[in-house]
Image (tube, rainbow, N blue to C red; front, top):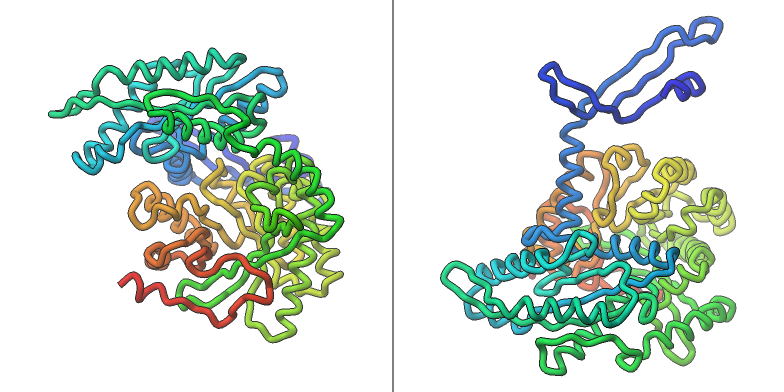
Length: 496
């Protein structure tokens, strides 16, 4: 602190202070040195702000975003994050991991016959029983519905994972006692191993799901191990990695644009540029398949730079044609964002394409910002100084500090589609979305919700103060020439 004050003349940061009552509470402190005529610091001025409410909101948002409200287990988001860290550690230490995907058999019958209230009690009881079986070294999560996941670190052998699966199945032989009900449940389990079956969390989940399907097909109340025969995915990824290098050289990549609508009048306000791969043999390759490959191979930064250039040229063309469009949004990957000269790259693209920077919006994921928060804030300020707009993508899925968010020169928050999917019914999603909208409003930011697939979702978002929306209900991503600029679907009539 003192070195910073003496060298830079000021310091700001979070501290802990004590009230007269003895309670410890958080403060945001800013200190500035006052210099005399000789340029020497003689006095200090300090300003303190009580940030208890901000820290409390931060904790509540983190809890809602990362834990299942019904069972208090980690949700899919937190499980994925922990699994990613576990795989990174296992890779460096040359150890194995196992992922067990657990699904309750015929759970729908309980909801249909006894009601969702009893169904919720069953899920809580199942969570408690599963937690009682394992220690804290194993990560147990509820991924959604009646699906649970168990991550086992230091699992070197298939027989070890199989033994755990059998232990879970055996534990279900004891009935669940819920008020006036004595219920017998069974479970099916799919198992996938790292590194033998998969190298990423997405692959592990996908392969475990394939194994789970096999377990259910074999009669339920059992487990199945993933094998390559269940899917050709592993081989396909190897082929795609090789072909992706050629795709860039042979100009097989395309930029599609998904309209972003003003929820007040449903008219198109802007577009988001999204990369697509038009493979000569496979047809359109899903971004979910080739983007992870691009990230692992290091090609993602080159792809991002190409998309940025293409989107800026297209935006200038639209403006010259008289299209009434406010912005084109371009995603910036973590790898490209980490480049120290990103602002210079963007400035060069703007010069080359002749696009007014006021029409460009860059989207940076919350996780990319959190990799190195202080460096990220400096990078964002340099980008903002170019005259463009900035948005935080997938907000609510990471661990952002609200204090850091306040320091970021960001004009927009994008609500992740995972929180939009359950609207307007799921209470957790409702709470999270309302908190994000209120947070953005308090900081003078606009809010964009992605993944809108129903008119009811758009109606709920508008009623709660969200200004912008995109998703399949409005329009799918499409080539530039296919966009209908006059399309303004009226979701309010549908909601009524």
